[in-house]
Image (cartoon, rainbow, N blue to C red; front, side, top):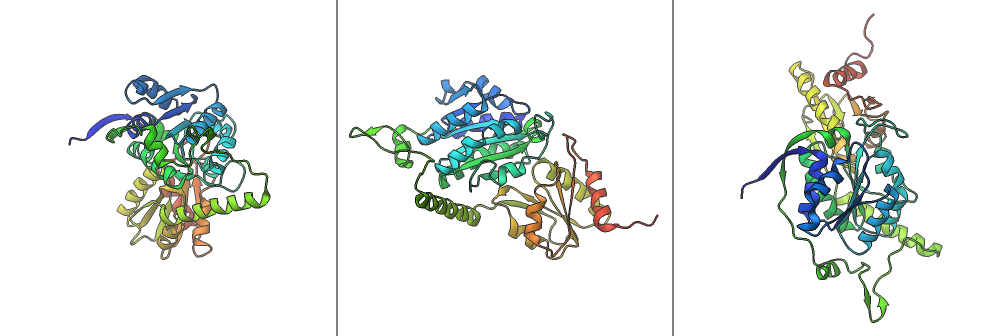
Length: 365
């Protein structure tokens, strides 16, 4: 069968992949730089072809609560937004996690804090990986670096969300959302019938049986002992995810004297810096975390065994570096290089930072 190859933006790939996954609903609100997700869905009109509901809500708060309702009924539902919009969704995301509901949230990051800039950033790392809302919970967080991964991670995100009954997030930056590349789109999956939903999601609220509601979905528990048991169950799920779902990419790590750790689009810039450095005989390797949670601690720890230093490169003030330092403890020095305000570093800046920190830390004046 011939591949279905298209040229499109990362945001557009999200929309196409959602339809082809067989998603039941999208509820969102426009905000730069991810507005093309909603715009593309509206243009494709999947309600006429697959029956997928596409609704522009009155706010981000409304959209995440619509996702909550759809997820409670066992449907494959999603939303997308950008940094300040996702901040408004945090209470609803916490409710989804506490109610053990599968859902997909897409965050195409822009610079902050506050309204910030419409230019790209990676400064929502803490918000996504540390549980930006209240309570002890985690999201499965996927970090795409290509438009192809933007498409692929829709299906993966939904599949993991339903496997573990927990929300998943695609954490992209504005570069990946706005850049255009060739994409191989997945084949069309049929949407599940109501009977399939009832069979696959026995926990879902899906009508009445014998005059009584079949299930009740809630995040409220007034009994402290029961709430502790709920939290213990959540933590067991998270340990299972950490055991089974760590994903990362390693490049040039076998003989590396230095290691760069980067995610998303900046990892591609770092890879170019590494290739240029190797032409000069400087051996640098790259670890690109694909799952930001669960984080690839062991992969970084292993790759760092024989290196002289690690440079963590992010488009922020330094957030992922905390997890990198946890991975290696004090066994190897770890430094950070990043730009803020929507400024994207180039390969030479990355290489210059590594030279300054490790190769020539005290140049003679």
